[in-house]
Length: 340
Ligand SMILES: *Cc1c(COP(=O)(O)O)cnc(C)c1O
Image 1 (cartoon, rainbow, N blue to C red):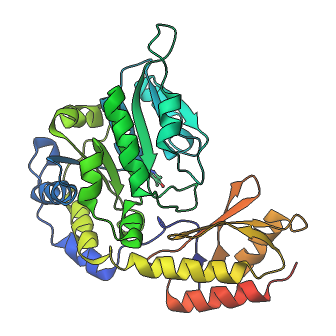
Image 2 (cartoon, rainbow, N blue to C red; image 1 turned 30 degrees about the vertical axis):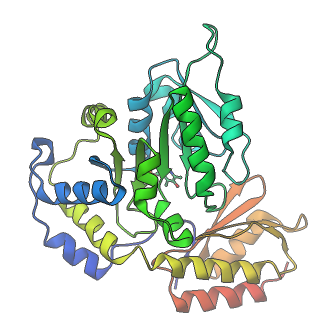
């Protein structure tokens, strides 16, 4: 038995999901003729209370498209120093949109409205023009942390005052919604554009969607084409998204519960230095200085358990749909038995 805890992207489509995919009605989506894609896009637009949504092959492409839609070359986006758009999209912000990132020193991936206000460049010709603010919820490098919704509202006010666009990287917004008992419409009301992933906690093999207002989304199809993201009979994949929206959102609470249980065991082990607060399905922890990281990973690997290092001495575990109760009890007992 392999227990793969590297990411919530490692899930395989379930039998039910595969059946839904096999039955999908499809057409050529480049001709705007795939009925299942249209249903998925419309459904997500409605969920978030926005007029438009567009299906993408990846969350990176959805985010990169949003950056392009909001900015002109030379402009600047404000985001956290740990943001996915800055760290894990291969420098795409500068490559694709010719923009720079003003990095905020947030806490666990989250910053305040005051920090945003202070980071906006003054209106002088020698500064990059600040035109966009980006928030990530849950924050990945922040350890699956959930934003305080009141702070997001305050940031929206700052955006309004300074005429800045407001984008949400909601790759794991589903985890925040179930954990904090929030609604997608709350987010739709505050953000101009929102990217969501179907391929993470929701268990689809592929797929992300960019949701937004009419005006800003006008060129989204063109930008997706420029990035090479036009797709044909992609309704088979959209069908997996529809299945996931019906079946896999509420169950995320199980992933969160198991993550907290893992954290509770970890914190009591002699080889652990610290465990960051666990809010959703991500656990970030540090080993004692005396424990070698590679040795730790390979000891677990020998037991069939996979996890990854995040650099700077931090390790990450992510719970997900394919992490079963049996795996959970086995993993917990292995953690208790390990010695270094
Ligand atoms: C996974 C992820 C994305 C998108 O990743 P892709 O692998 O391109 O789908 C975007 N933002 C965050 C925070 C993520 O964790």
